[in-house]
Image 1 (tube, helix red, strand yellow):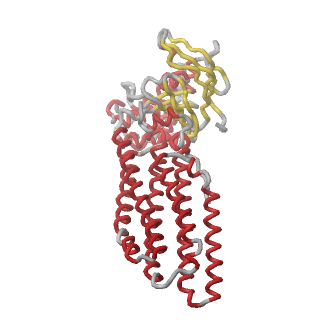
Image 2 (image 1 turned 120 degrees about the vertical axis):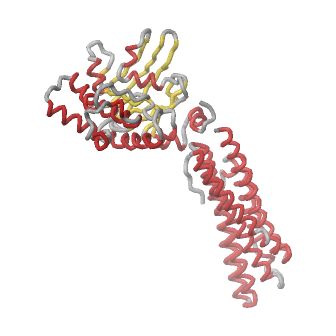
Image 3 (image 1 turned 180 degrees about the vertical axis):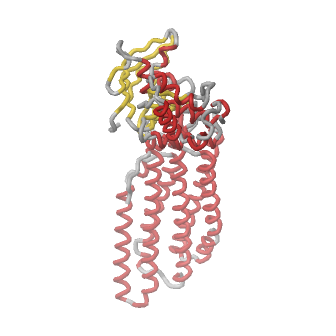
Length: 216
Length: 253
């Protein structure tokens, strides 16, 4: 019986990784669409919304069934607890991708202000955090997430700097207000995605060691 | 364990002839708590349990070394009264084993052996013990019926009442639910929860969910050794030893 359960646990993890990759892909694609002002690409992100949502429902249900039928303990229990968090965070990251894609539709007819400020750089850093935390979950390793607190500080600082820069441009030229406000929003969404990566990192740490830590 | 210990074992080894069944077992059993012993078949958990009231003395060719203390007194010192020891450390077995007597006489048996003759006093002990074992309501109108007419779960609770009648300090339970259905099991588990107010309970069980449900402390044994012992929550959430982890997640055993 334990073998069957462990095989199911493995499948659960594989499918959760697929969902995490989809969430990451939606965010990356939305940011690329923003940079390239590509409305078609942005629309393709919105089209994946239902898919990631149904993945969330299906995988969460699977977790609850595995708990109900197997009463998992120790590492097995911690894997499921962590997986539930990965599922929720991946959905959120995917949804932020969709929200950013909606912004692309609104602001792509006018040129970028200051080359999108630090948004492309910030997005790269956030994507790296998401990639690393997915790897940490997949391989059950903590090495790639050891610097997450410092990396999250960098993300927070970038959001602040984009905020200040956008304000400056808005004061200079009221016609930039729509674009700059949306830049502030995008920076905020990216920062939230980094927070979700930190949340997953905390849970991977719990899965790996059984100890709770705070990463932010 | 920060709680005061009622039983302490120090480097206990036990052999059945040449076969070593316990190897350097050192542990503390906290007072008024439920401690569960888990581990695969043949790991020594029942043997260890039977050390606590020297039940292994009844088996030929058993050799024990090390120290077992109850209330800070070594139970192997020559002057130890084994009958008194077993009064203090009662035991409930895997299969309910009521005597072929009435319900009343089953419970009154122990007190009578220990010299209680007064009928009113015996009545009081029987009623109180049956109450404590959560079976009084079911048997109060048929105390003179044969105990063998009770269901398995009732028989097991009667055996617990019989143990309680001599006012033990510690109750040893060796797989007390493995011969019972889920409802009778739930009743015994509820009873264990009540018993720990007045007694120390040590339970051996194959059922890990049961150990997790009823105990505050858990010891995991493997091949005669105590691998890990600690708070039940810790053992089942993040055990320190890989062997414990592998056992409770069903990777062996």
